[in-house]
Image (cartoon, rainbow, N blue to C red):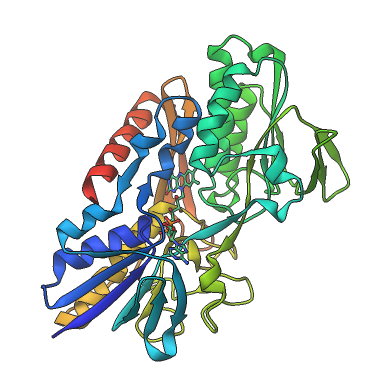
Length: 383
Ligand SMILES: Cc1cc2nc3c(=O)[nH]c(=O)nc-3n(C[C@H](O)[C@H](O)[C@H](O)COP(=O)(O)OP(=O)(O)OC[C@H]3O[C@@H](n4cnc5c(N)ncnc54)[C@H](O)[C@@H]3O)c2cc1C
């Protein structure tokens, strides 16, 4: 039976979904994958680019390679999603679909905090990180701040990884004792969705490295002339070098699609099947809003986009070929690079009730090597 499946976004979720669908469906089913980018970027290694351990080009893959596998990759801007008419409009062509997988991720909004764009090095942008490497190599004295603009943000571990890698770099350069390193976040403790035991473990790692941790501090603006951050609670902090996580929104086109998002701006989905309010339309990865039994939201991380994509691909194939469906079970993991050739490892079940059951394994060389293997595997497996 001929079916057209359209996958929107060639990031983590879109890549896994389109690969899995292609490998299980015959040539009578077409798989279209649409993205405005021509290259995929492997975000978990971004921060290695900041400390010179990777060149940006090592973290990229041409999306055009996917056509060799029989995935119809379309490099275009998505301009309209029309679930009522089962249609997607793009700058290249219109696509009718039988099944639609939305994996359009989160947009970064640096100007949500006035002054951020001008004053901060964006930790979530690969080209900005490559420039930051030069700045960090010159910085020898003063206050260095990692600032989280707002919640939610992608990869709850990433800002902590950033501050620990910066600390490592300064120690390597023998200038750490003349630099005050601090991190400010609106969170009550690090990675709150993983629970207070994980938060305490991360705080302890920061403390051991003499990094000042400032919870419950949400920036409202940055005075670029005076080099000061102004927080919602009225407090202020000075900083000579500012590294920041910008605010996030769901992808613009998703917010513009009537009936797809809720008042939060993200897409509510069934936590097991990732089905949206619309028939045969699934939303996976960062764009999806999944409420956990604890009342918190499932974090935005590639590992979830990956597993959710596998579930959605399996269920679409089962629907077409006849078969038993499956459900996403909430498992996830991430590496937290700490420098000195080591990483911590956080894993567990985020769907556990009444609260996620998550553990942090202390930094060791094993997890650092685990992350290197993970990178190699990813860059090979999906291209
Ligand atoms: C520094 C950093 C480190 C990270 N480390 C980790 C980690 O170690 N582990 C982990 O699990 N996660 C990590 N993440 C998070 C991870 O990158 C995201 O959670 C993941 O990429 C989400 O996948 P996705 O498919 O939902 O969206 P994305 O991978 O962001 O893909 C969305 C795609 O949609 C495209 N798009 C959006 N709108 C349009 C449009 N209108 N037209 C055309 N194309 C469009 C974009 O170009 C993009 O390619 C990290 C993120 C950062 C920034």
